[in-house]
Length: 345
Image 1 (spheres, rainbow, N blue to C red):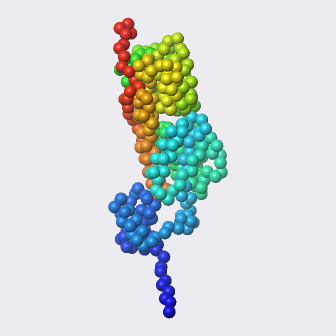
Image 2: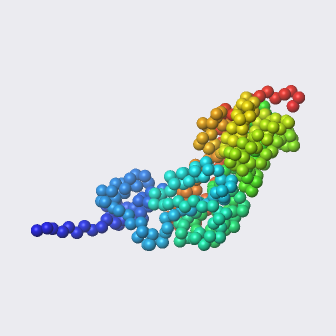
Image 3: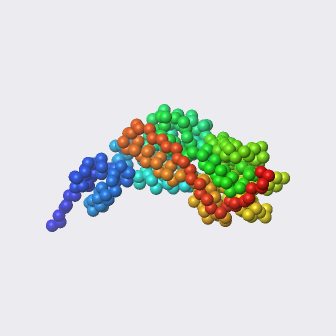
């Protein structure tokens, strides 16, 4: 005679009863929510494994009306968004999000009027904004009541969740450092003209020069696009100028890479012949030859705080607006030489 054992399915309510917590806490813990204490999360995970709990994501989506998809929107994936910045943002967002969420990477310039940008298709969106031209897209997302956080650009609104760095301060601090090192002859390689970060970093650079009594008309300014090739091209033009600067400020690290490469190709040594400063402190910057003096933009912290804010809005239907503008940090390495200031200056 064979026996038949009827085994009741393990549910969130079953786990909640054994763990002596609410079913909401169990749901959050199994979704790796930051709102659940680590020790509680470990306890619930252990009970779920021991009981053989298997989540039914399709059923959960039907009940919760959620897609479990978070959209990441960059101003423009084809122009101005460096591959290193994109990679760092996506990696940090993926690590920080609860494990039941998936990421969808998009470009604002092709998505602004896309009917698929809806609360049915995205539980929330992370907008990596670079330009005021993104504002219509941001307004469209808010109008559709999609939970959103805006990262990277200070949008100057009291009603939006916003996390960004003080680009103006960062550039000013970098230039002031170079001036303290004795430099008074500068070149600047700018980023994308349409990007707010470019204007802020240029303004910070010029402010430091003004404070030091250095005429801006004496500065060589070249346009770049935040990518290495443009840094290389701009640096070649600078090195071919009649009046060579002693220090070149690049408005991001990717252009600094191209600038250092151009120096090597044209027989100039960094920093012996010319100094270079970057901006961002990308992961590779300390491994360059020479290691790059730069401004540390706290991208990791910005993304982490933005993701935590977005998850809280989605899971708690939170209405509190969260905003923070981060001060950058000067990272001194080997690409800037200390020089003596001539007596007649």
